[in-house]
Amino acid sequence: MKVLIFWDVYGRLWRKAMKENIPELKKKYNPDFTIVNIENATSGRGPVAEHAEFIESLWVDVMTWGDHIFDNAPSIKTFFEKKDCTLIRPANFYENSSFKQVGKGYIIVEKNWKRLLVFQLLGEVFMSHKVLNPFLKAQEILDSLDPKSYDAVIVDFHRETTAEIYGLAHFLDSKVSVVYGTHTHIQTNDAHILAGWTGLIGDVWMNGPFDWVIGAEFSSVKKRFLSGIQRWKIEQKTSGRYKVNALIVEIDEITKKCISIENISYLQK
Ligand SMILES: [Fe+2]
Ligand SMILES: [Fe+2]
Image (cartoon, rainbow, N blue to C red; front, side, top):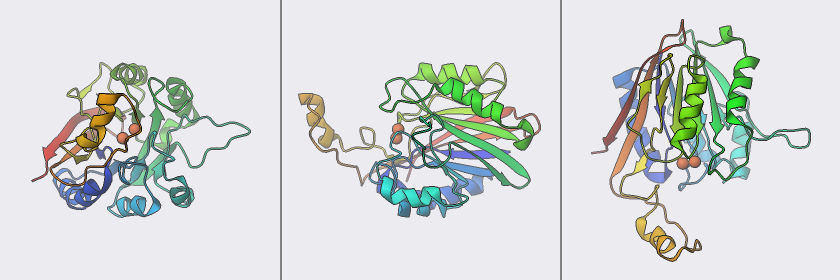
């Protein structure tokens, strides 16, 4: 089984670029499934329903979120709650008798007689949301499902530090096929298979403007850096060079083992 993974479609520039790049990369790598993260799809913030629908229409099988999940909550709510929605949220948000989260934290998608389980977790270190322990939540999800109900497992770990994802990946080694990191918008040069059989990359990067500070115009964040005061508005970068970043992984669907993991990264011509 081959899976093509795009992290963090950032704003207008990349929504446009997706239309050209997804079909081309699909032709080149011939994946069984495609996963796209859309947490910054609308002007660098959480998507409105229209943008989620646009990305879904590009034959994307699973969409994930992150800490920007509720930026445009009223617009995305209906999309998120529709039957067979392919958008998932972090699985380790608080949920209890007095607060029910919308949507689901994991999904099993099926195509070409192959079944892929995907779940997303939020990290606990330096993140703004309070969440349940991601290690225990991962174990809980795996324990709650019959391993015969899926052929591969991919975990999107949305976190700030490399230490936390390495900890989770080693915890899940030989239990899941691939763990990939997201959120920093910087690709790490460390895609590899762990001592067991789980594939790992610290961070996939993002898809969007190249000459930026996490997707923003430097001029709009400069004052924040120089003054220490956060009141100035951050402007999204909407023109100039942009970069395509993705991950292609191959998984043996009989054993669930990762066979290969390779990052894709190029400047759009
Ligand atoms: Fe994020
Ligand atoms: Fe992001």
